[in-house]
Image 1 (cartoon, protein in one colour):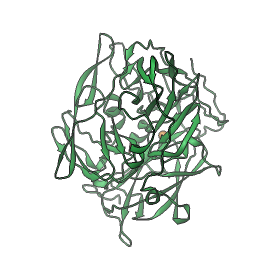
Image 2: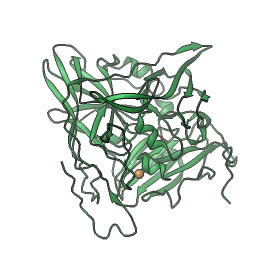
Image 3: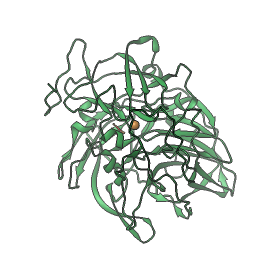
Image 4: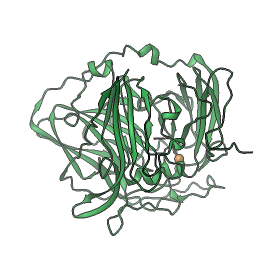
Length: 489
Ligand code: C2O
Ligand code: CU
């Protein structure tokens, strides 16, 4: 429906925010089968599982008969799903067939900074890049996308994104639906604006929080349905949008939340919906009866009493994906699992935290500064556990993402986090004017010169400078200088 703009008088002083221009979502027909991104082929050479990805231009029919120019990895839109096991060494041969530099960042991955694919690892047109690292983190639904400084919004919006699934002992033994594309279904949710010629349009009108599309798609399919042949289906939800936050669930049933960004919860949690800001993931298990149809829906936002002065899409409600159950459904057991053999190694302990840092986000800056590729903002010691206290100080939410780690939300304004924030996280929706205490540990990798990023995952905000850099150093070591960048004088 149409958005209402509830202006919080006074709260806006000094803050030039403009409401988003497109805030209502078209009703779709749900007559097209959901596209499932193919599993990426790989070969194992000398113990390393090697994938390849090529960023390229293409044409996609989001609407029948309308050719939209898009970008994709190894195809015209989105990219294949990479999949690897904890303990494996992987490498990815990344090639850039575009006319401009891009990069590929492994969102949620614990890996050396030089392999991270952030703004310091751009891949020029015609060039290739081959990061390699060992998978050493719990089973999870991670993803990959470009991260070229100042152009991430455009590259993701045009279609460069894909999933990177990790498996481990716990996920393999779990009674969770696990047949990829059948009862374990990737669902990349995105919104777009298509102009009169059917081309992707990014608004540059300064609207907050960026471009809100009126066309919603899952895995690039507008109005998709998925045939369900089992009693339970697992949906691996990714908010792959540049700006919009979704509240995903079903109007006629609850679902079991089984995993957040960085992997499985301690136990399933019954929920009616889960909020996902750009960059966040959730795995949910939904139960169906033979022959029935239901739709994954994005609900109007429950702002929890917080006054958001701009609708920012929060008032929109729309269907996202139709599930059609067959007349006969194969049995699926209740979701259950045992802790991983690595649980003790992975656990974060608040008592270990010796450092607390504070991050204040306004409309484009973090702690009063915009991103500078030559400036290291934070220096972290390898092996240390830290608490990051993060707050949006303006009447606008943000989506705070930290590279390299999976963190735990200790509290929100002093209260225990809600269930959807109780599992491993790398991206956290910040309700305005609330303090999120985040616990994280920086293990294994040091590099005084090459920084990791922390930033808002609303990609217009990121591109416009809402990002900072941290390096992880050995004890007593000092921060260096990012290669090719002079430190600011
Ligand atoms: Cu998903 Cu720094 O990004
Ligand atoms: Cu933001």
